[in-house]
Length: 224
Image (tube, rainbow, N blue to C red; front, top):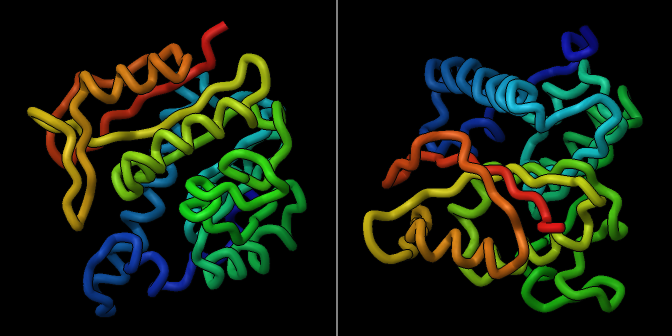
């Protein structure tokens, strides 16, 4: 497998994503958990027929390329990932893109671009052409950006998704109203689905809905 040629991301990258202390024993455990999590994401997408041969894949906030590493042995058409952490983008480009040119990594602060619209005058400004993506993945994004930015992201997804395209994301649900705290954001299921519906998406929830800091995975497709 080509993935066997790829090194793991630096321990400090993986540890920072897991928000735990960086000790040798913890780093070893995190490396295993990191790979398992990324592998499970690809497996889940394939099981739900959300990842197909020839797909043009976009990952929002791609971090240090864990999901991308798991795709190098898949028959996708292309992969594009962006993130606001330049050191992670630099590592991904050096270790993944130079080995597999299907993969492209871009430094881009979507939080700024999404709210202010700063790229080529386009609303929200993601650096991708319209109708150019078959499947977009947003793992642990809605939990960490503001509610305003989540809405902006979903609007921009409508632009970049090709006809028949779909987005896969996870979200935390609250028991009552939506609220934000310093660690993560939780949505009222009613408010979240209302937002999705008003933006023109059909949606499917892949699991029984749960509340608290537990991911609820859903797929979105632009309503015809």
